[in-house]
Amino acid sequence: MKVLVTGGLGYIGSHTVVELQQEGHEVVIIDNLSNSSIEVLDGITKITGIQPEFEELDLRDNFELKDFFKHHQDIDGVIHFAASKAVGESVEKPLFYYQNNVSTLINLLQELQKQKQQNFIFSSSCTVYGEADKMPITENAPIKLAQSPYGNTKQIGEEILRDTTKINNDLKVTALRYFNPIGAHSSAHIGELPQGVPQNLVPYITQTAIGLREQLSVFGNDYPTEDGTCIRDYIHVVDVAKAHVVALERLIKHQQTSNFEVFNIGTGKGSSVIEVIEAFERVSNQKLNYKVVERRAGDVTSAYADTIKANNILGWTSSLTLDEAMRDAWQWEKKIRKNN
Ligand code: NAD
Ligand code: UD1
Image (cartoon, rainbow, N blue to C red; front, side):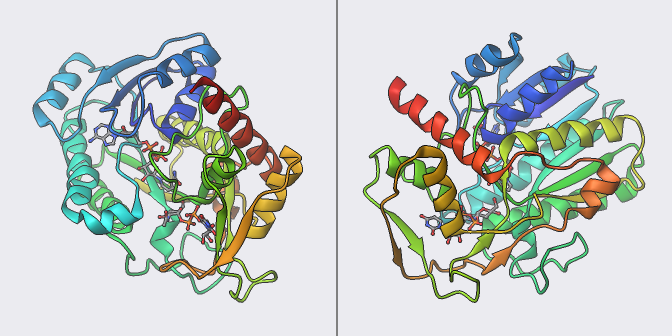
């Protein structure tokens, strides 16, 4: 099949392009390079031996998007990653986030509605569950009031898609709610490229270990968990990427039970911040400099996925471990610092 991957030079997008190509699918990428680099194209090509088609295009630009679809009428499915994702920045710039994450989705759907094939995978997030009442979190858990404009764009995106499938029978949508994607491709040709000071745990750990940051701050150890630090469901980005291939193939084979489906993409296992640090220390053979500080505003105590629906209905299960993810994140960090 021929797959359009928006945001395909970004972190999760690039790993998904690799998995699609390795399963024999043809890929065309749209990206405006606002949070990625053109060199990612070389990284993908080094792994798969195939350079994917790339269009530098901003999804906010309706005219360019129209023109794109005029020249690509043979697309079998769309995987839509392109969005901005910095929670803190979204609080500072809400209108930018609603424009870049919501209006781009509308633009894309308006063009897609004119196409023969309307199979669509949407990047959603476990953030839609907020502080969930029960662990593990199933797809039926209530959607809580969003804690940030970013989180809200994911909720609104799901609603737009659900409403549109109700009136357009040709549109088939799967929303994948990722838990915490981490790690990099084991080849170290592609990985995460955080801009500025990382907000997320794993790049902060690897940047501290490589000497770019002085010390990791652990945000609170007085949570009601075993070691007092927060619990998350960290999942290897390659497992996340594979879920997209499975989800798209399911749509193309008409295996979906409704035109709007939602799946949790996690491992089902929660790990504390301290356990992630310990995993890093194990695979890197070095101690990490960290200290416990105040809680970070907005953090939930615990969030890990119930994966039964993804395992049994989607037919996808994660297979890589936390140690493997930390090993690959570390290999990637060493590689990019060496190249710099
Ligand atoms: P990323 O920033 O690495 O990738 C997004 C890509 O989209 C970038 O390459 C960026 O240049 C591109 N882009 C942004 N706005 C665009 C526009 N207007 N037009 C064209 N391209 C544009 O992010 P990621 O971590 O790969 O995340 C991918 C998707 O998954 C996002 O929708 C994100 O919200 C969602 N998500 C990510 C996580 C995570 O932890 N990384 C968790 C849950 C959900
Ligand atoms: C992040 C996103 C969220 C997204 C989710 C899933 C933020 C604020 N939230 O949340 O929108 O849906 O990923 O991908 O970016 N930690 C430290 N020190 C650090 C960094 C983090 O102790 O320097 C702790 C945090 O308190 C948290 C855990 O590590 O307990 C994970 O943090 P992070 O990587 O930011 O992910 P989430 O908070 O789960």
